[in-house]
Amino acid sequence: MRNFFRFALLSAAIAVAGCAHNIPDDGFVYLDQGWSNADRQWFYTTTQGSQLIPYDWFLAVEQAESEDAFRSDANINRYRYLTNVATSYYNPDGLPVGMTRYEDPAGEAWVGFTCAACHTAQIEYNGSKMRIDGAPALADHTGFHDGLIASLDKTGTEDAKFDRFAAKVLGEASDDAARSTLRDRVVELTAELKSWQARSHSPVAYGNARVDAFGIILNEVSGTALGLPENYRAPDAPVSYPFLWDTPQHDFVQWNGIARNGVLGSLGRNVGEVLGVFGRVKVKKSRFGYPSSANTRNLRDMEDHIKQLYSPKWPEVLPPVDAQMAAAGEVHYNKYCSGCHVVLGDAERTDPKRQITAKMAKVSKLGTDPRMATNFIQRRAKTGRLKGAKTKVIVGRSRLGEEEPAGALLSHVVKGVIIRRVVERVSGPTVEGVENIKVSEKSLQAALSGLAPEGEPSVETVQMNKESPLLAYKGRPLNGIWATAPFLHNGSVPNLYQLLLPSDQRVTSFAVGSREFDPVNVGFESAPSPADFLFDTSLLGNSNAGHEYGTGKLSDAERWELVEYMKTL
Image (cartoon, rainbow, N blue to C red; front, side, top):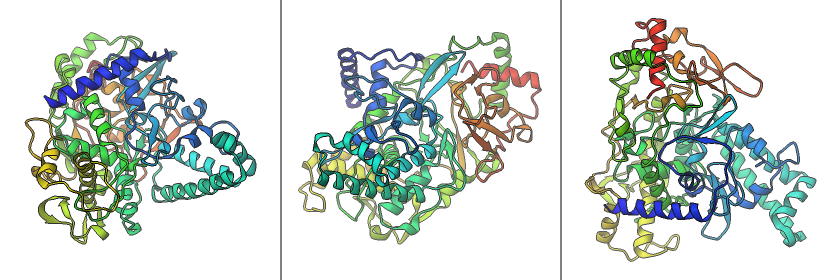
């Protein structure tokens, strides 16, 4: 009940803000997904605690090879992130979708990422442009960061570029001393980002619509935060950004089903995400967790907000569904697909209280590329200064050894971040490094149990996902699947029709990056063009094999019937 009232108050505040500060028409078509314009602008622009570069730098920095602003709409579109309208309340500087302002404890403003950057899609068809909330973005993660780092590098080394940059950032304070300090800091932060770039390099190019989030997060937590570069591994198992609707209602999430929802699970999952997108954390053995930039209150509100989001229905701007073919396709779906991908009826699809059980399929049976699952299961990390710390930070008897599964170390750190926030709420702001905080274990446990929705187990029962099968991928309901191409966990299949072919008949390369929708095959246009990324299924981690349930038994006519039915989900 407490969570219900929290969300009701948040929704009311968002609605009031949306009415008080008009949101201009941006020219996009938005489908019915349970959110108002104010809801989505709140989601697009609310900070999670990510700190990429100082905010005024992002507004001022030029592209490496021109004087055009790096944050210009044309450049943002080039990387397939999404532009956003300027609003006086939510987004006064017109930042892209999912890039927002964070103010650190010292009062400095930073630009950073939020969920919407990777989980908002744009689909275009015959001149219509649709925005799909919660759908996977076509964002070029590597290209964006490479471009930004190159731009900062040129700013720090080329006098003319730096002069224009300093004039915008410093304004009237642009004396020689301030300019010298600014330039030194640009060089310093650029070096930090180059270090991040080096440890985040993958021999397998991500291209558009993919990232190895787990690989990057584990590097930042087990390597950077602990000061142990020997824990770094190449993040070489990129996966598609999963769609967000139904996520809070699942028992387990992530492609490999290792993140448990409920209790601290969903909050821990989101804290881990922030640490992978330039959230900061300082890790040393402590009774009271780890200070971090991650904004746990906003992360909880975002999770509650996503509970109200539901899948988009096939819109009227696309060609109408052939009802007769779809009815025939439903028979095939029930025979070959429904065992792993249950169908949500309209009432259940929109019910915030829906509960969904993950259907886990072993990689050996599924036959899809195993690299993402095996990387996570097999990766181990030295614990360094955390050796001997309690695995659950403040409760339980088990302690971290000299080396642990990297996932267990991540679980420990994100719980420590959450606990630190609870300590600060119970005892008031804490001074870094001070451990004589006056807070009783009883009051701390009471505050921690308050993080769990009513009826769920207490914090003492939280374990490292022992219920989840190993080396498996998750099947989920396919409602809204039409808006989520490319397909399979690693984005190796361009459209639904290709997915229904035996894997040896699927295309072995295709272009990714076009927003133009193909309503026949159900995916994006995938003919190669100079501006798009060419996906090569022969590369490590890019296999398009597997998931052949019924594909060899269906005739081509039956495949098209099944495609037509999936448009209705």
